[in-house]
Image (tube, rainbow, N blue to C red):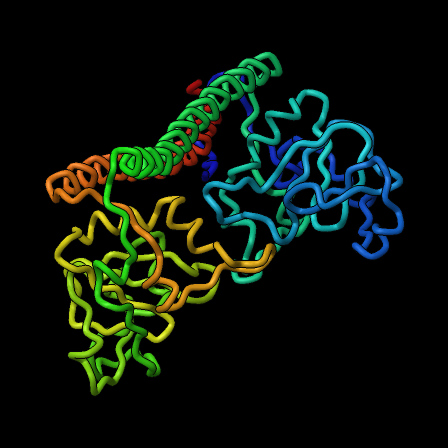
Length: 394
């Protein structure tokens, strides 16, 4: 947020932090009183007083240097070029401040919150000559302009800013709660579908009775050069999706044996995602890596239906069975082949289940996308709001 030296509303005046360049000061620098204490020393001096640095509290200490309402402005390590995170913050009461934050005491006619709002999202480009290793030294910090209305107007605008930002936080919280509810709804629905299906007499079979025997993937090194088919690895499967544009290639002399096709299910057999599965749909020419297991579904079951079963607790309990407490579950071809699954014999009923669960997932994904868009919009709201405030438009 750039503060141009434009015409201010009647009764306002321009100041700067240090009272330089012919302007009156908006603050007094107390930098001479701050003192750094390294983390090792602080660990020996734990106490009731907050220890502050460039971007907030860093710990606790057994003594204090300040006991008043102050604004701390990052000197180095601050979020100077970040449109969302603030470069300053307000502190009150007994505290200790290290040498990575300028300590500002507002002068008598400057509201401490007004001063903080002026600095939190200011444009620091003119005051930091080396953005690669940004540091706001005291000389340049003194030049930062502050638009100043009369004290009563400062208090009114601060109250208005706080009211609007409170509403923003409420909106953000409501959107987050909606997403959480949707995300809880889907696993619950999956459980209900398969538990009810089992009660209603769905068929119970082992995987090997209705699928081809599980197959391990191809062993080869990945490369970014287009030397052969795409080479799907565990790490390429993120949040149940694959961005084929980012999947590397490999040299493969047995493409036909390992080539993926629509309807294949692949399972992670090691690492943090052991047991997680991915349904392949419309892949490019691709083979799968050795830390994946491929399952090719037989005619009795829709692959899409089976992919939903492999997200149920019924499946995960089977994966975890035989695993000692504290150990990660393991997955191999034999274990996968012998897992029991449940499904309705009628494929039309399988399709009903798929449509229902797909619809829930689509709504959940839509809410998540809207949450991300809302979060981005609301995050930009505060700087925009402050820009209006400093033009006297609130």
